[in-house]
Every structure is written in C-alpha cells, then in structure tokens.
Length: 260
Image (cartoon, rainbow, N blue to C red; front, side):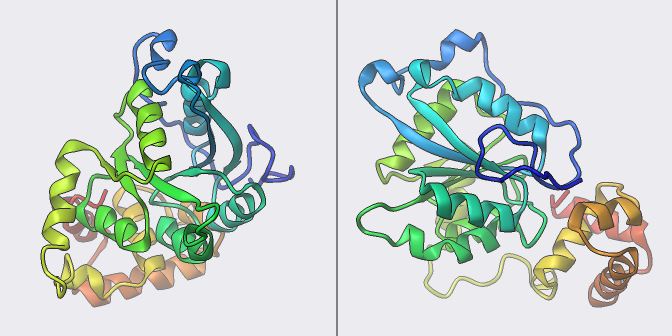
C-alpha cells in the first residue's frame, strides 16, 4: 500500500508492498560511532531509498542517531518516483540507493537525478546498498553515476564510514565487487555483461527477478504497481526472448546468473 504521508518526511512508511528484510548487520549499537562519528566534526545528510520499510527502519536505527554517528537521515523513499521527489527536495550529500525498486530500479533514479550529481556547488552522491552482488547490477549503477556499491551484509560502523568517504568523493565497494567494475571498465568498448539479459527491458528484468524469487503474479502486480495482465505479458515476453518454456526454467536461468 502506498504511503499517504509526504515522502520527504524521514521515518515515513512510503512505498510499495513491504516484506521483512534484515537490517544492516552490526554488533552493539554503540559501536557504530567509529572514525566517522559526530565527535570528529563530520556531518552528512542522507536519504534512504529502499522498498522494504523494515530495512529502512533498521538502517535508520543503526546510523541515524546524528549526535553519535554524524549522519542525519533527512528523507526516505520506497520507489523511483518518491526517490526523485525526496532527493530533489532535500538535496542530501549522500543517497543510500537500493538497486531493485518499483518504477524502474536504481538506475532510473540515477538517470533522473543526473543534474543533481553534476552540480559543482552541491553535488548529490549515491552509494548503492543492495542485497544483490550480481555483476550486472554493480556495473549498471556505477555506469549510472553511483560512487560505490556495498552489500547489505555491511556493518553499521562500515556503512557510516562509507557514507563519509562517498561524501568526500571517494569510490567505495565491498571487497569482491571492485573486481566487477575493474573488469567492466578495463576497456572503453566493454561488452554487455550478458547478451541474453541485455535483450530484456528494465521492467522485464524486474518481473524476471520477482518470478525467480517465487512471487505470484498478483504479488508482482502489487509490488510494481501494474496489472496482473501486464505481468503476464512481461513474463511471456521474457520467456520468448530467452527461449524458455516455463517459470521453472526461468528460475533456473536467473539463479545460474545470480540474479535472484
């Protein structure tokens, strides 16, 4: 259910259908202070973009005590349209951006916020924070302009430090993900990550992932704010383009490419 409150208000429950998701891993909450804490005089205004409300709540609890961490959460969003609205209104230093979002995904948020990223006086910088460690997700958001990519296994302490590093203009990656980026940008004419996957539209990729995760058509329709008939059409298109026969083959195909 969409939130009826304004999306700019921090702590709102705006967005798509919410399912439980584990918060950022860390030890004791007091350990989040670290070198990036407010005691060092550093401060960063941050927007959280993720379609799982429980995850946003967990991140807020881990990093959002400004006096302790130096991080001020100034807004939240659960889909692409909300994200663009909140980011434009609040102009944060850093956006924590999930890759898979209703409305076109993190790449679409980056595309629509390109002018804000290019603002020489007050640039908005993006740090992808996602459960996915798929190469095509990492490369997609980096090509879109994100300054880094970390997975949701990151500790609260490391996430705070990553936020300040991105604010300073550094690039930040979870260890094994940096190799994806180096490989992709080693050549100026780097090929697509996956030619089969490249045939699919962004919406078809979203439907593909949700089907592979076991969602029913009605659940997908609610998650993406589209009709069940439209979901069926996208599934038919995906099966045709990938030359697959049914959703079981589709799930195996997606799992083999670590898209789930």
